[in-house]
Picture 1 (cartoon, rainbow, N blue to C red):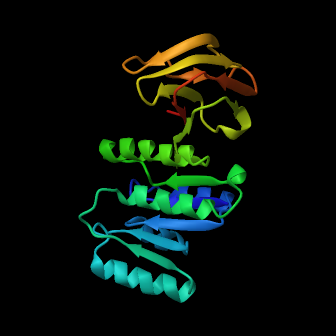
Picture 2 (cartoon, helix red, strand yellow):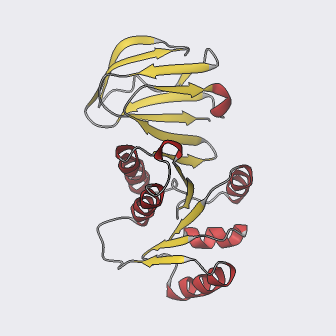
Picture 3 (tube, rainbow, N blue to C red):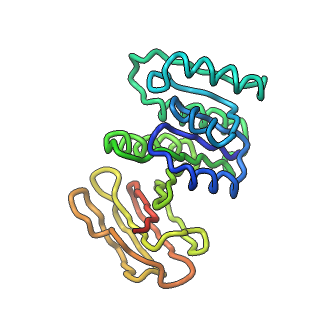
Length: 226
């Protein structure tokens, strides 16, 4: 099960259109203002979620009718604006529920339009990825210059699957222990990354693959470009 979430952050129409064209998804979920982004690109969602306060009641009603005319099975989850969760978190929870009905080994949740001007939302969205990780589901935040994913066990990065130059490792939490990196410009053995230092920033591929192992903790892994 592959699920695309279109959130309500920064919208690069050219990038999103190209990305959607190059990738195939079983479900599309739009979160609040992401519904308008979907309309602009001619994408018909399977699920609409959020409080739709950014979108507004009139725009929400119009988009709901338009999408229903194209997809009679559209599911709409409308929340009270006074809530604890962000719209993106609700979308991720919904996506996790969808994935649980499929083969988790091949499940993937991609979030686009999940970055932008508000750093608080960006940090919140990165932390929300932990819910998917804990459920055994891969989840990524993707924009034109970054791919962000969390790992709590050994993993391999392949150069042909990482479109950007840099690979950065950042601890999610106090410390990630026993990190080993092979195939990079800056290989290490038994490295501990702690909150408050920036040692894991801006590594690069030196081979076709980078192998990373760790003993404990959770890594934020960012493939980024200038």
